Amino acid sequence: MLLLWDILGTFVFCVSGAIAGRQNQMDWFGMFVVALVTGTGGGMLRSLLIGDLPPAFLKDPIYFIVAGVATVVAVVGANAWSRMRRAVSVMDALGLGLFVVTGIRVAQAHDLPGWAALALGVISATFGGLLRDVIRNEVPLVLRKEIYATACIVGGLALLGLDALGMPEESALIATTGIVVIIRLLAIRYAIHQSEA
Amino acid sequence: MLLLWDILGTFVFCVSGAIAGRQNQMDWFGMFVVALVTGTGGGMLRSLLIGDLPPAFLKDPIYFIVAGVATVVAVVGANAWSRMRRAVSVMDALGLGLFVVTGIRVAQAHDLPGWAALALGVISATFGGLLRDVIRNEVPLVLRKEIYATACIVGGLALLGLDALGMPEESALIATTGIVVIIRLLAIRYAIHQSEA
Amino acid sequence: MLLLWDILGTFVFCVSGAIAGRQNQMDWFGMFVVALVTGTGGGMLRSLLIGDLPPAFLKDPIYFIVAGVATVVAVVGANAWSRMRRAVSVMDALGLGLFVVTGIRVAQAHDLPGWAALALGVISATFGGLLRDVIRNEVPLVLRKEIYATACIVGGLALLGLDALGMPEESALIATTGIVVIIRLLAIRYAIHQSEA
Image (cartoon, rainbow over all chains, first blue to last red; front, side, top):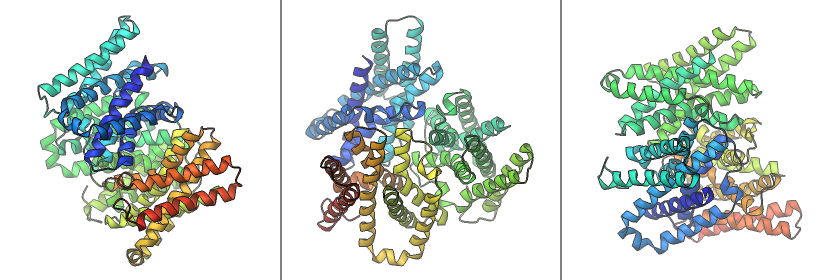
């Protein structure tokens, strides 16, 4: 289930990266690289920080394939995306939720204490998007939108809380991811902090 | 004593990061992240480079607490800061001096030769500020002000020299930090290279 | 022979970094740092990703010396460089070819499968230039010029192919580097994708 979460999260972030690259008039290859960096950047930094090397994207070619598919999706669906701002926001929120969960679980598997696992979860969820923005020469979204990272923190705390309550794994993962998505989408809907992804 | 140096250095860099984030109209969370990145970025890269994982900020929550306090200090003292340019410059110079020393000592503890320890000391002292500027989408200060990094190099050389002379540890640390601070402040005072932090 | 490749590649990228720093009105020290980052960034990330620590530039002072020489070359030859755009392009193309080869060989020596070795080769060849551009606050060249990274990928594939054919090591290295240089220079010459380094 964690693997599914990881692949799904990678895919939605890759699509967001590819769309962002497209907005910067990048060509196919540039879009692919930004997709890959956005989708795997969080996991890569996490691997570096806990010494779990090489990182996943060098262990399994699936990440390159996902980034490639995401690039195609971004190009083919270009017209559709511009009409579907909401879909992009939902996917981005979903990616945050999925990666907070996987980040925390991986950190726990490496025996990090709860507060450090929470920090790694938030880093995993937000670092890919931060790299995406730095490479594109913009001040990162995550630093400008309070509710962006706050949603991750609340979701991560919820996961640790559900663990303490003995919630079964599947339910805990789904509930946590849902909490992050809902907080993030509510923040966008009610335009909290400039909002709008 | 090294721990005190590390915490003090982290604090002054966190404050500089939080103030910088504020100038970019970031909200509380963004300021906190920039503070954390500025204060712990140098030590994080050092840990990655020598394979001393996970880095300190994931081993001890004190760094998050320091970054939080620094953010509060930056917000509460906002009016004061704008009147106290000199205080900010002094703190920044102090951070450089403190981190050069801790960086070199950590590198030596990992059996790196003197020249590599000096390089790691300079990296430790300057990388946090470099990240702060890259994230905020500016050409890093350290690359534009010669005396910025030169002060670190001279201080680092002094530390290695004092070691060779058999200077007691406490005196060597204080002398080295003082040298960096004085060089940096003299550079600002006499406006060497555009100067002004 | 790999060591020679590595040093040559480091030198040409260091020169490109120093010239780039000069264009941003950096002083000597800033130019030196950008030179060092451009020349060693690719190898550093590769070392971090495969856990081969500390990275080469902290094991052998030759990289600092090369970056220093490159800075001097960039400053002394400043007038010459502005008249020799072609020379800079050739050096940059050469650096790509040299680093793809060394990156792949190092990855293979760490038992990575072929596709991951190819990915690491491309990362080794392009990451230094990406850092150079991010630090200078520009959207990275590698993301804007398709043929830039494509040349690396084709060259890397050629190296793996030549290995499979049992080509002797020296011939394989020279042939691969030549392929990358030729593709890149043809791309510039025929102005494929805006081209012009």
